[in-house]
Length: 108
Image (cartoon, rainbow, N blue to C red; front, side):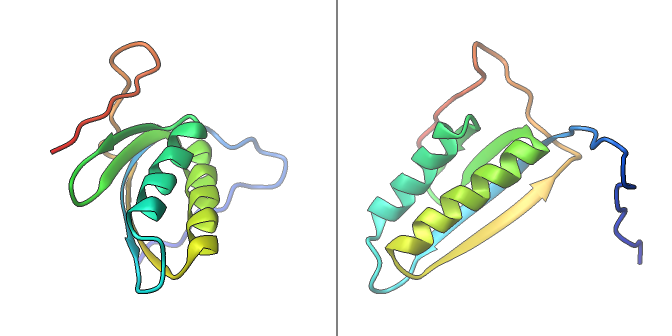
C-alpha cells in the first residue's frame, strides 16, 4: 500500500484540478431539501463549478478550493441537523470549465 505523500516544509503545494461526486443525506430531524439546497448553494458561493443530478452533485475546481468549500458546506449542513455526506474524489478525471466561469447546472 502506498503511503501518503507529505509536502516537505518550505515547499509550495502544487495546485491540482480535481472533481468530486458528493451526496448529502439529511437524516430524521433535519430540514430535508432545504439542507441539500443550502449545501449546493454554499458550494457555488465558494466558487465551485457544480452540476446537480437527482442523486448527487458533481463539483470540480482547484483541490484546495474544493476541500475548503466542502468543509464549509458540510459544517453549515451539520448546523441544521444530522446528515451524512458521501464524497468520491478524483484527480484522474477532472472536468475542465468549458464556458465563462465554467459553472453549469443540470437537473435530471
